[in-house]
Length: 148
Length: 385
Image 1 (cartoon, rainbow over the protein chains, first blue to last red):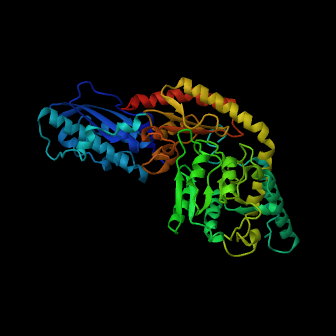
Image 2 (image 1 turned 180 degrees about the vertical axis):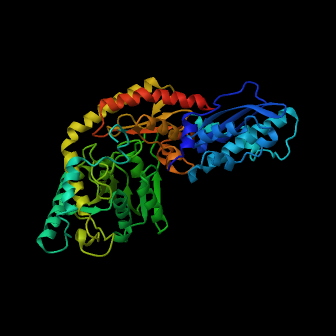
């Protein structure tokens, strides 16, 4: 299995690691059980994403896709940010090994989940944004796998 | 690749110079087929038989009890499937453990599709099988017990001699996969008491693609590959002469060096474990600290994932392995770590370091120098920390 130079670059030098105090929207997806958890915080001003930060528990691809996803949405209006797909992230990284494609799906989901949180908190609407796939599960992410 | 620090000796090892040199003539000048009748062939045949003697001696076995194979997985498959072939009159029950190598686990699962039942014993949090549990699992229809001598991930050494006594008393055959143990702990098949035993060359500084199955005199062993008369008609196919020659040399040398090498690896391991556990918070050693192979350390680091650790170690030229899902190509982490009761999240954050004959104190010190920073760096990025 080989990572592209872009994946390794974003893994070795991840962009936008951290948290945003008073984030406009925050989303956490994945679970400890399958080894990937991504948290994305967004700062949104006048409908534009002015900052994005992430924290990820996961493999090289998980960290790289989170990093790339944040760089791709900063400066974008929310209406455009929702168009971010796992394919956009993968293309920007010049591809992922087949077993790592799910990491890019998780990055897409993390961004959508943060946007959904923003929508709920602010009572606004973003056309085309569906609720996160497994919202119920997201309420209590599988942290139980880390206890004991 | 001279500046690498290779700490993945349980995955494979570098072929030692003595083995590589011994092999070379059998690719070139001595290329004969051992089954032919002229001098060239007789040299190849003699070389195979010398190697058989060397492997047998390393195990305390007779040369006639050694069958060369294509590696550890083949030997495991042969020993397990042979039960149906050679002992059809016996019952159809196999006892094994939850944390065997996949060559054993998947062969047992295959047997389950062929009318056999298998019991997968739990191993407990220390990673050591309880002989009493093995005895309790024996049924009137139990044909085979197959339990590894040492685990490939956590290195824990199993009480095979005790289990062999139970097996013998209860009239059940015993196979043990000794692939990881050879060269690291003393092995004598007579003292161990197993009926079948698996070994492989590439874990002991020999070549890949060659192994052996020991079958105690008096056991039945049906052919695994049908064809020519090689391996006394039980494993057909022209012998991998260079591979077998390299295996013989490697087996002889690890047996000779064991008394010096095992304490040396143990000292390096202890240095590593002490240093890592004291330098890295929320870390621990997986599996029993002392009932394990001298060169094996397997750590759990909470809140982070193993593949990330490996990628960062590689930046420092250090190669190791992990039981995380990302390194296994599935969504589940190592079945071994789950079997010893580790929660999924922690199993994803495991790091296996396996020390071999080429490792030095400087290797360990370099790992100890960089590892705490790597763990810290990944934890700073982790939403769980």
